[in-house]
Image 1 (cartoon, rainbow, N blue to C red):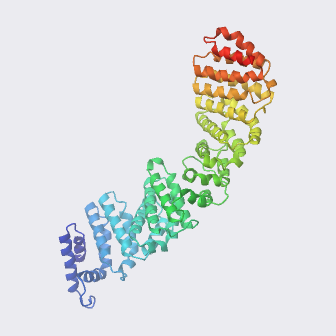
Image 2 (spheres, rainbow, N blue to C red; image 1 turned 90 degrees about the vertical axis):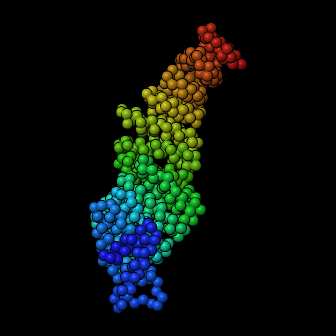
Length: 562
């Protein structure tokens, strides 16, 4: 009890008080049993006190462990500060600390989660001191890791895992690199445990990030790309990047990725890092290589991690798109849960919007259009279905505008896409109507003269209706689409009643109050002149006097006379 009391004073904030306590410890050692304390000539007070503490280490430790769970926070803090001093007084060659490591680790893992910040800070300092005192030994890490990787029954609750991870972080901060490297594989494997990565617990994921940062700062350039250590660390980062945005973990996880890229010989190049690890990461997310996986809902940690992987990997995701195309396809099945379909469709639209990724997807555009996107654009009742349809239309537009769709793919997809897009021209969402118009325009432009008479006659009434839309964005989009529509089939497919009605409607809109719309419609009629000059001239002449401004009519008539 006296030794324990003196140890507690050794950590006093007042240096003079702590110094007196240390001197008293040395004096106490000198009055002990000489058969136990044999000091070399010239032994320092520190050496004498160390021998004394070693002799009673276990008894003192058990007293401190008991007080670490005392009902008053002050006593808990005091016991942990004293334990720090106790550990500081152990000698490198003494076995007392090593033989009691399990007790120390268990006590610290429990105390680190204390509600009082002062207690948890004292625990952290104690753990850091423990790591420093053990030097090149990884004994404490060997004892701690089974508490994290699930080897010990009952240790995988979020509360206990948080404590173990925080203690791991503190011990790593105090340890020598050599002791960390010796068990690096076990550490990285423990950090990548499914019970941790797939947890929705914020505090557990924060503790994981802290341990990850401490670990990466120690291993330096010890592990090149392609090792299991690098893979496990990167996998942990991907899950952290996919965690709830309200957890504020993404910046820290991003920094950890950059640290890993610097450690494994990639020169800090994240793209190069993911290029080498992408396929292995995807296999880990699947659970097993080439396993077809369907995550049930949009909040599934594995789906979130996949989303994060695709977004952060950039060009690497395009290079290795063949390894993930089946994941997109399996999740886009219209029979699946709408939540996961929506998340996956938004992800696909986002990654394809990156030109660096899109250039690698050219060989998959036919499958993406026909099997992944088009089925989700088909009209279905309900608010959720409407949201999925809207995102799917945006995804289709992104694919079409990316210059990765060749004429053959467009030609084969057109019979399936045209009726679906025609139906969605009447969608209640203005942005969906606009994107449908724009998508039709890209298809028409990609198939000049390729449409038959039937699709021409089915499409033109709905396209003309878009000129009356309440949204100016839709109206402008319709103008551009009608221009290329008139070039998408042979001229004879437009002649007759269709051209008569088309010109009548266009001339009405050429008298629109908006001069920009007037000019846009004039440009459509200028193309119509090439289809049936006589009808356009006849209609323009007959309606000229009804227009508030005859200049565009005169210009059109003049164009017809050329």
